[in-house]
Image (cartoon, rainbow, N blue to C red; front, side, top):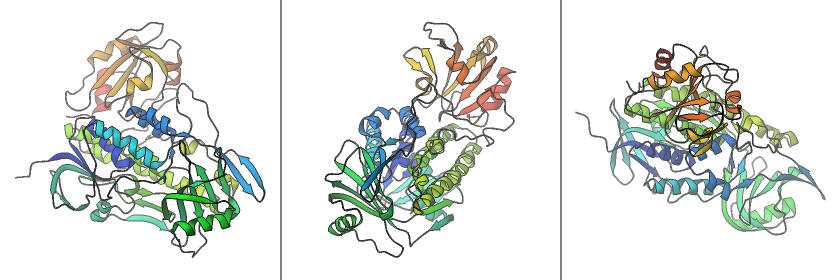
Length: 500
């Protein structure tokens, strides 16, 4: 006889990855605990770039306003070349469009991102258990039994390791962590105050391999100093101040956090071992270039959360296999891009400072994966597995499609009279995430049974040319496009991710 489950999911790691997962699971009504071996929440600025796609995740969780209030836009770079400071635009400043409401990276120190997510967890009734390490676990066909550093044994249906690059969960699985660590290449990160340095520039001294980025809504900078090969880091505050002054002629003071890191590029062999999953830095570690690591981790668990909820409700176990199938190739590609940018910086190429569309993570797709067959029907603009774009529309209480999607549910949009007629007859199970059904019509006005596409932009953005059903997954990706044989085709499209 198996032991009863204490909870549904035990999460190791209370950083952005683990906190995002916990928030997503809690809003699905699941029983969750988060443990973290650190004595308290992270206090540094480390991963400070929140990409557009991650901002969309934060909006879905209801905390984007907080993030925008506590963050700010990336400043222009100021390249210091001797006595001359040359302005440089690192990335294009894009204007919002109907399909991409948040087109620019957000500058937000990691400790603030953590705090925003932790406040969300508290509102949902969960407190992260700091100073509690996961020491060991065993699993069977029914669940996972974990032993904590407090001596407590916790029985859960699933365990997720979001416990960083030195993941204890990953180590216990025995999975390989494939890649390279350059022990001779080290960079110092320092949160501090710098008097007399303008706050409207990300200051860079290429010849000294040093930089200082102003952190929003504070008097602090994040300083980075790349050490010479073989140079030993000295984190003494006075020594750091002297080193920075010798390199740049600028004085820093009031250091609040320091770190020394090595460029570590690694990818785990598998994201899943039975009932144990890995996410974020526990599954992939990046160079700091391009602001990819935190964002990729958040999107890992945005992919995983709804699948765990559906599996617990009775969806086929193969749905959980799709987590690795969809996310591992994405992580591999992102690692490559991050490494490419870092190599450019290491050779003092100004091109390495440029940032473009690829880093924004809006075009990432799960096409061709287990939930998005390559031969599935498509519209003029979208295929199954693509990000579902935003669009203006009129519905009770909203003027945007993203607000219709917000929440842990699936959404199906019906375009055209035949698809609309089929909408109420689509079969959906009582267990798991609910399905919200909307018919899309033209014209004006608000009707509780319809989404009104008054401008035609929604239909255009979604590339719909005739009668069509479009299913949107809880993580905001296209789960199905159906153009004929409505009920049977819909049932086939959803069988992989709904309870039997």
